[in-house]
Length: 409
Image (cartoon, rainbow, N blue to C red):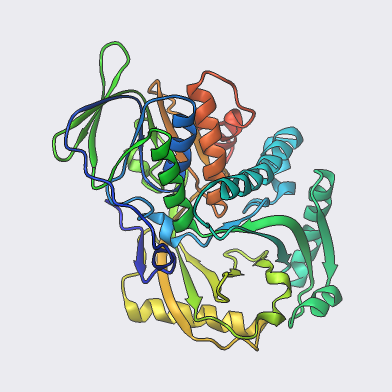
């Protein structure tokens, strides 16, 4: 099992009503087996059981216990790859379709938040995407024009506009409205509870160590404890573990990032409307606030696969992050309370891997590679559901594992 994060996480401590699910202790026959109990697995499972399928979700650790706790809970309609660049990469029609789908996914999060019994901390927010340097300004203006042409509710702010609303100046910024934030741990546990109520079977501490195709098209999964599951369809919602692919996941990279959460601040009036904030520099700084007045900030990405183990070295990254926060917001002085290092994945074309295995029928993947992984998880759940139902989905060709855009990079 990959180690996905080190340090102290904030979100798990906010979840007071998580449930425990028993390990699998008998053989099972199901229509669908979902492997992975994080955001992608929970979303997929809920949609599939609501379609009337018998389904089982298998998690080697605990539900919401993998990358979910290290997720910063940002929901952007924009992505690591700018829309103007995506247009050049895959064409105007598909680029617009992908970006609009990301905005639609945020609406789906809101609908789910309204429906779930749990409070998942969902809040609509605007985003400030600022030019890190003057040389980034022409590209940022080009991106603003592309977003405007795609129908997004965006504004372009000058340096003076930024200074009127925040205690810092930057050369310019795009303000995107109707983005959002949420609590990942509460959301995943809420989804799991809703899915169980709809008929899903969940088993934690259940590690799948073997997957075989049987005569007649069925799939057989075997656990580390020797129990077997037979299913017609298998969905891998495994986060950043590409070696488990039945086929071949091409051109993916694993890196590590750093994040911290402060103690509650007492003077967030300086943070205009609690905007989500990020920048054009790569790697980029990204930050948000929480419902209890904390600041979450992340960045300092490094091209190393494993999270950092040294407490001292990790704290040095945290000190750099808090220093960058205080350059923007000198008024914010609350100390660090949580800090962690986490693995994250990127594809070379900056799109997620979602869809059917190119080599194995009825095997599917929900792999939300990229900085907008939560949004990609929502998209993945709907794409996979439609594929299993035998329906076409408008994103399936754009995000499939053997897409043409990967062959061109």
